[in-house]
Amino acid sequence: MPPQRRHLFWRDVVAEAFPGMTAIAPEGIRADLARWHLGPVGLARARSARAQVRREGNRDGHNLLLHLQRRGRLTMLHGDTAASGGMGDLLIADDSRPYAIDISDANECLILQVPAALLGDDIGIGALHGRLLPAQEPHVAFLNHMLLGLWDQRAMLGDVDDGVGVGNLLVDATRLVCRQQRSAPIAPAGTETPVAYALRHLGDPELGTATLCAATGLSPRAVQKAFLRETGLTPTAFVTDRRLTRAAELLVAEPGRSVTDIAFSLGFNDAAFFSRCFRRRFATSPRDWRSRGARPS
Image (cartoon, rainbow, N blue to C red; front, side, top):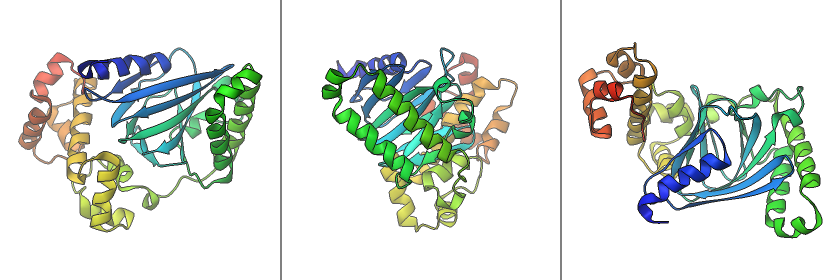
């Protein structure tokens, strides 16, 4: 695939594998996706450079997706909430609801897709949306080893099982994990990563390295390293980029809201400065962006 078309091809691959999902990636991205169908259950391995995927909500079905990290980090955003997981962690998404996932560089993830109808009404899928399940939790570790073993031995298993039996085992394992997690307390803010904290507090005009240090208990150097590791950017650059991306979305989604109000709600305290930053990021003014109905890329 020519480098200048890779991002378009990757967008089509992701959309075909996960209906309703849009991949936002730089031109020339290196990525691949492999899938394995196990009856009604799907298992996929995605390997990617830095990118983002977004989902407005799947209207063609209702599935629970469990993202198992093998390399890199995933940061899931839904509403004003963020969760960031590293190697061995699981991130849960309900694909009937909107969310976005930031993908770190050199990322590898196994994605288990289970139809919600197979899990039963007692699971409470809605409450699991956006939950981070740590690798050290016993039930998560069990599912982790199960998924890794199945994926690594998929060629052999294809000769001894039609996929339905293994798929049913994965449904049972998913149900076990969900039952354990549905009433588990959400981790307090002080235990989240600096990136996750920043994403939840974009509207705070005082958000900066000092605030992040106070919120997470980390040193300035540790905060800087965390941002570089997860996003490839400094805290200031990442926060500014996220604020501008969110502003671009709101300008189109809320046409009756003033540009100044949107800017102030996202932590900018100077409308002229916001406009200059927006023009530098998107090569047009906020008002022209709104009139074109553009979307951030």
